[in-house]
Image 1 (cartoon, rainbow, N blue to C red):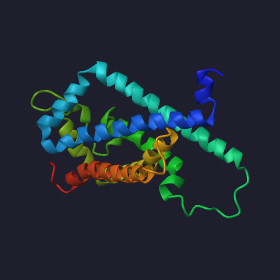
Image 2 (cartoon, one colour):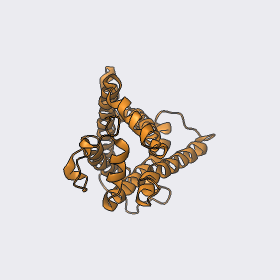
Image 3 (cartoon, helix red, strand yellow):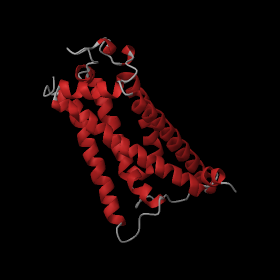
Length: 230
């Protein structure tokens, strides 16, 4: 059996793929939050950051393609493992023993698919700049600051000023962090890095990190809706 078959043809290999892709996506979620939080530093800082990314294709495009590959691998491995688990247990248990299983762990596939749908919308909204989905009637691609750079700051303020968009974002971020609260802990298990001595610490880290991420992401649309960022 070659390495490709070992990784993609076995349940253990698929769990490894899910764990590695999940770890890399978690790192991106953290970095993306830190980049977005620059909105609180004002338009100059955020627009300079956005301009740097847009004018550095040797960083931007490999990152985008790498992220796309990780998303595809993560979704693929999740669906395949879910199907294999159901096939191994075709007849449901007479009594569902889910007392010890958290809500996050029982809804991983569902929350993951909803998050994937939100990511598509989010990309159309703030990356592709499709006017039809921003619900404001404004052309975000035409927003420029005094230096002629794309006005990312103004785009975010206008975009999140629409209550429906902000609410959708908050719900999606909540689901993402719920997903991560179990997923981050599980990836340590899948990689063989979790044991009875510090397993509880890793579980607490996953929950704490997920809470911090939610607060960080939620702070942006909340501050805009409250008029603290304008």
